[in-house]
Amino acid sequence: MEVQAPPGFEFELPMLQIEKQIELLEQSAPTPEVQDAIRQLQKQWNETTSQIYGNLSPWQIVQVSRHRDRPYTRDYLDLAFDDFIELHGDKFFGDDRAILTGFAKLGRHKVMVVGHQKGRTYKERAACHFGCAHPEGYRKAMIKMKLAEKYGMPIVCFIDTPGAYPGVGAEERGQAQVIAESMFLMSRLKTPIICVVIGEGGSGGALGIGVGDRVAILQYAYYSVISPEGCAGILWKSHQHAPKAADALRFTSKHLAQLKVVDDVLEEPLGGAHRDHHQMASRLKTYLSRSLDQLRRTPIDQLVERRYEKFRDLGAYLERLEDGQVTPAGSPIISEI
Image (cartoon, rainbow, N blue to C red):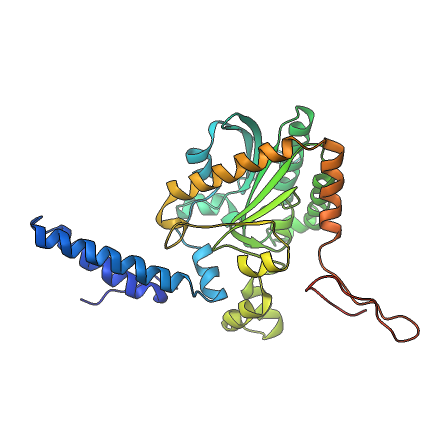
């Protein structure tokens, strides 16, 4: 029986064919032969999925990061946190639903959560601007982060956006300026900050809440200065070249760990986080709890200084001197001035 993969997921077709066979067998009488056949197919599915997901291209990873069933910020709040109390508004313009903020409990830690929210249905996605925040969203985030600092509460940021909202109204209200202000504020906040890229990490929209003592990324997420479509539109004048741009941008978790842009990579369940929300939430909760325990033991002044130096040290460059010599580079990221 032919099975059609969801749009953009043709590489999952062998997995879907096996799943369909398992589904048909489960509908038949539960004889020992049928049960044995199901176990064999499940083993085959595990092997096939490991092979496919162990060799995804950067463009395929982008597609997985955008999967419609991938857990979002609110899903993690329901599965990994307790007693979430949402906080609204920026006290200037309005409440941006693309940025979700509020108090929550993570085990024994009381934290402030700040995260992008995309929405599930089309109505929700439209209300959340598909995860693209306006200036009022980042102003809301800054106000809540200052509140967390006041009460000595750690901050947990979930990054999942294709980029900040690009509309005229957002630009008129100071989109670029407010993102810069948010990054500057986060660099000096006297409280622990952990940032996790859970899906898309696109452009300044991601960086606006991405300055932390620990920056982690899920295995099949990406974190980039620009989306592959945006890069392709600039360099090749067509979004059809997005796969080529994805290969060139080096923005997958493997690349980012090698370049030391992120501190940790969180392994996803077999077949991606969208296949097992509970397991991914459990892994995320364990990572956050362990990291908060470690950060809490560091004196706050030392923590802030390390955070500042961490981002100052990102990247390296070769500086050409007057005599033609160049200074040595200390990082894989090299550009010549």
